[in-house]
Length: 119
Image (cartoon, rainbow, N blue to C red; front, top):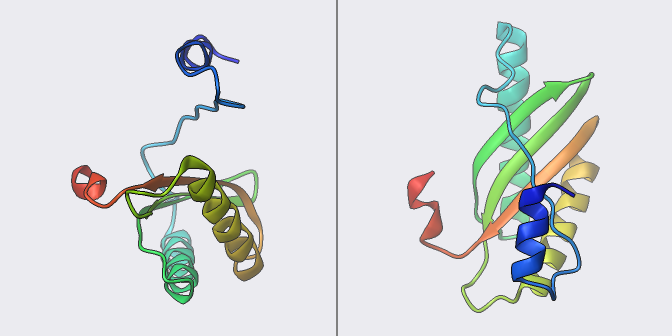
């Protein structure tokens, strides 16, 4: 656990776990074919989310160690509990893994409407 994660846990002791991560600034754009792969994956993510009636944005796709990695934000109603948002995140992750082969890490950020304005 990092110092940051420990500090969060100390401030909010009822949390079961705290995870932080770092995301690269640039997506996989090494070649035209990779740019096409990134866009194809992004479109699959949107299709999966749409089929589940989930509003997604800030979709980032990265290639590392021959695996595609995703980071995205999705909207949940403001009254959604952390537990319910986590469950929805797990369901969305399963659906993405079923639809997109060769996925490595998936980072999903649940947020209420209005928070995406700064994306």
